[in-house]
Image (tube, rainbow, N blue to C red; front, top):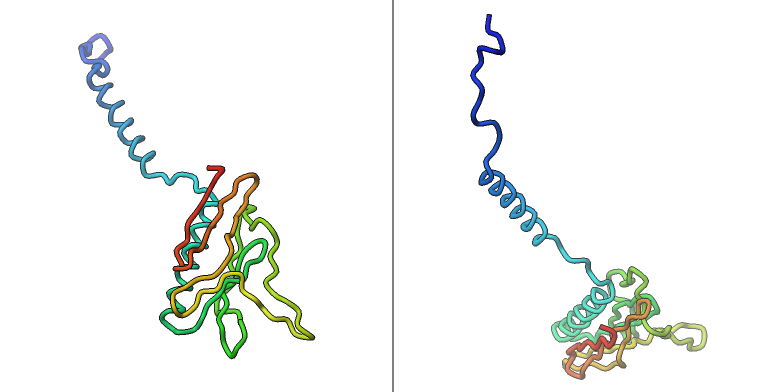
Length: 164
């Protein structure tokens, strides 16, 4: 029978300093790769402005391609794309865009007017078939932050964020 006394004591009991440093380096490298691949927290106000900019550009392109004027009807918490059909502005297919995370336009804008017994929808931004745009600057707000989007006559959207 083998007793404890008969076992030879090990001269290599543990890790060397070099092995420990290599293990720590590998863990730090892995942590750095994970950190670099994480998305930064998105700004809801900038996301809303980017979406509005993209939708204005898309509506202008659609007006140029189809020959049908397009418009955007602005509400306090979002907007709806409109099409000029049969001498009337009608909501375009698709859902209205509603902003999330307490993002809204600076003031409630009236997107419809009562004319006798019917309601006439009037867009706040008009994009026609010649590639021109009409509309006042749009200001998005969230808490105390604001972003102002100006739509140039050629349809280009420019941002102005004084609080950034």
